[in-house]
Length: 250
Ligand SMILES: Nc1ncnc2c1ncn2[C@@H]1O[C@H](COP(=O)(O)OP(=O)(O)OP(=O)(O)O)[C@@H](O)[C@H]1O
Image 1 (cartoon, rainbow, N blue to C red):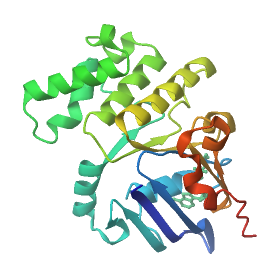
Image 2 (cartoon, rainbow, N blue to C red; image 1 turned 90 degrees about the horizontal axis):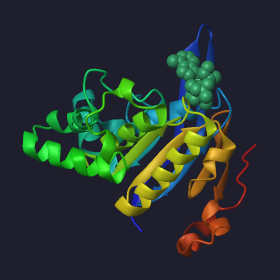
Image 3 (cartoon, rainbow, N blue to C red; image 1 turned 45 degrees about the vertical axis):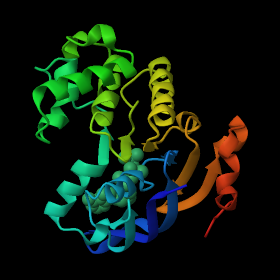
Image 4 (cartoon, rainbow, N blue to C red; image 1 turned 180 degrees about the vertical axis):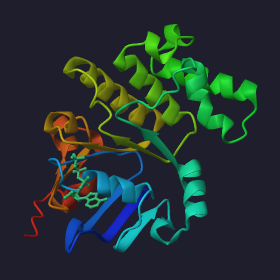
C-alpha cells in the first residue's frame, strides 16, 4: 500500500511574549492510501497546528512533511498553492459554502478555478451530489438546506477535484449528534468507494471511532495510535500492527 503522508520529527514552536509554546513536539507517523485517519485530542493539544502543517498552510519550525512524495516544508507559497490545488480537498466545520450559489454551483466552484469547461463542471458536480445522496437538493441554496445537507455539499465539493487527500477540520462541529453520525457514515463510505485518504481532526473520541486509525495527540505529541480495523474485523487490519502499540514518549 502506497504511503501518502509521511511526517518526520515535526516541531512547531510559537513565540508568545518571552515564552515558546511547543504546539508540536516531535511528531512522527505515516498514513497510507485509502485510510481514514482521525487526529484526536483536547483543546490546545496541537490538532489544528498539525493539520495546518499537513495541508501546507503553515511552515514547521523543524522536521519533514512528505505528501505524495513531495517535501512540502520546502515549497514556496506559489508551489504550495499549486500543491493544494492538485492534491488536496478540504472539509470545514462551518461548511464555507457560497450563500448565493446553489448546491451544484457550490460543488462545481473548485473546478472553475482549474479552468474546467462548464459542461464538465456541471456533470461532475451532479455526479458528486448523487454520491452524497443530495439528488433532490441540487438547485437549493445553502439556507434552504439543513446543516447536515450543507455538510454533504461540503463533502461533494471536496471530492469533485478528485484529490489524493481530504483534510477535515471538526467536520461535524456545527451539527447535532444524530446528523454528525450520518456525516461520519457518509465520509466512511466515500473513503471506501472513492479510495480516498481522509485525515480528520476532532476533539470527540466517539466520532474518531469511525476512522480506520486514531492518532491521539496530547501536548503536541502523538501518545497513542489505535487501529480500529481490528475491532471492526476489517480484512486489511494487519497492515499496521507495528504501529498499534502504545507509544508514550514521556
Ligand atoms: N498562532 C499561534 N500563536 C501562539 N500560540 C499558538 C498559535 N496557534 C496555536 N498556538 C498554541 O499552540 C497549542 C496548540 O494549539 P492548536 O490550535 O493546534 O490546538 P487544538 O488541539 O487544535 O485546539 P482546539 O481544539 O481548541 O482548536 C496551544 O497551546 C495554542 O495556544
